[in-house]
Each structure stands twice: as C-alpha cells, then as structure tokens.
Image: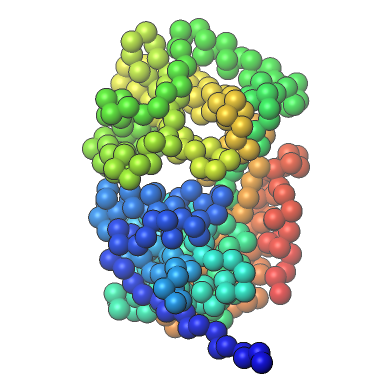
Length: 390
C-alpha cells in the first residue's frame, strides 16, 4: 500500500554569522559560477569586517538554502545604495534596506538547492530575511548584483518582490591560445592597438611574473591595491585591504589565489589578483604604485593578457572580469550577462508590474546600445529583459 507523505516542513533561522554553519553543507549548494557565494569567501568578509547575520533554510536537518545579509552602504557609495543602482525609480530613494548576498559583492547568485524544493526554500529564505529587516527597523530587503536568471527566480518567490535590471557582469571565453588567439580574432584596428600597447609596455622594461600569494608578498600588494582604490575614489587605505587578504588567508581562500606581478628590476609596480573556482578564473583586485611610476598599459597586460594566457594553460573555461569599464572590455571580446536587483519593501511594492517591465526593457536597451556592433557580447540570456515579462 502506497502512503502519500506530507512534505517535510522547511524551517528558516538566522545565524549571527557564517562561522557556525557547516562549510561542506553550505558549499554543496554553491554553483560552478558562484565563487563569491562560497562559505570561505563569505566567512572571510565576516573576519575582515565583522559578522553579519546569515539566514538558512533546512528540512529534517538538511541544509537547503543560505542567504547572507549585510547593512549596505546607504548613500555613501552609489554602488551599494538603491538610489545609486536604480536611479530611474523615484520610489526607491527613501528608507533603509537590509542587503542580501555577500558583503560588497558585485556578483551574487542564490545558494540554494535545485529541483522542486527550490521555490519553497527561496520563499522561506526571503520571508525570514524580511522578518529580520523588520526586527532591525529596516524598510525592506534588496539583493543587488544578482545573476539575471536567479533574480527572476527570487522575485517569483514573493508577490510583492520586483526584479529590476541594473548592471552587467563580464567574462571572456578562454581560447586555447590565450590572449594571442583572442587578439587574432579581433578586427585589424584592434590588433594594431593591442600591438602598440604591448610595445609601450615592453619599453618600460617591466617583467610579468605569475606567483602564488606568499605571506611576505601580501602587504606589498595590499599597498598597491589601496593606491588604485584611492585614485578611483574609494576609502579604507592599505590596512583595510590587508585585513581582507589576511582574512582570506585564514579561511584558506588565498590557496586558490594567483597574482600577476609587474616588476621593474627589484621593484613591484603593479599587480592583479585572481581566484580559481571550478573551471573559471575570477579577477578581483588590481593595484599600481602611482607614487613612483607612471602607468604604461600595466592594467591591460596584467589584467587581460597574463590571466588569459594562464587560464588557457590551466584549462579554465571562462575568465571573469566583473563590472565597470564595460565598453573597454566588450571591445576586447568580453561577453555581458545581466545583473538585477530584487527589491522587496516591508509594505507594498517598489513599483507596479507594468513599471517593472518598462524599466527593464529600457535598461536592456541601454546595454545593447553599449555593446554596439559587438554582437557576441549579448547572449540569449538578455531576451527576457528586452521584452515584456509575463
């Protein structure tokens, strides 16, 4: 006799930080593209910046979903404030939100079981996060820089949630021949420009070296990264970068890091730090010594050519180059993938479904305009943002 069993109830709870959650159970839910959702990365941000609550969903003692949270940056940083990432929606400007996802991550994905239980688990995670926001006196929750498909799934878990396109991630498919093959595929003007950049770089006498991050090297690289951040308007200084890198060493993350150094004689003048995850290489930090030298295409050599050659040699499938400078990256062969914010206030909705559709169509149009004649930059994953969502 077959007996139909009632589905096991999903329970959601809040942990003070990532430390008390089983790393193996957490990482079993992390997808191949979700490096910044891994337990080691989230745990490292908690060690460096202080613990942030983490929402989990479980059933019968089995971890089914994880949702990190953090306070956001408010109006101090346009990259991590609602009015900064969604300037076209007037209703977004007021109030405070609890931010979901990894602290200061510009690419989030859902850490959640797949299959028929995924929707109920997402509903439980989002509902508990909303309760946490209310308990903390916030006005709602937002998960920004969320991979497009995941954003649509998360928004579908609550009737008042809205998925709003606001940015794009970038990656380079890694050809077997590395940077040289990618350059050879480009049109004549681009090839000539790449050769000119390389000649200018070579005239400086800078030598590129690929290394693992040893303990003595970390402070030197931290100083270069801090200089680059200061040049582009960020604060924190070398100690904040050093704290982040030391926290990554404590969680084992630096074991998967590789640095591409620019050396002029004995002097370290530039560095790019990348991380290996599955079959992908992630660019995370670039640093330069602006106090003693003048940049001469180090960013392109250490941020594109050297990592691409390394990725090809090691058999990586994609080289992820993150957000910003999209037009430059597209001209160098990068693909754009949509990033969206899921916004859920405690009461009401941030906009109507009709306004959501209008907003997303306009936003997708701007990204297509940026891609211009580079047809390879926009894949099929953009189709649902170009046209009215049901």
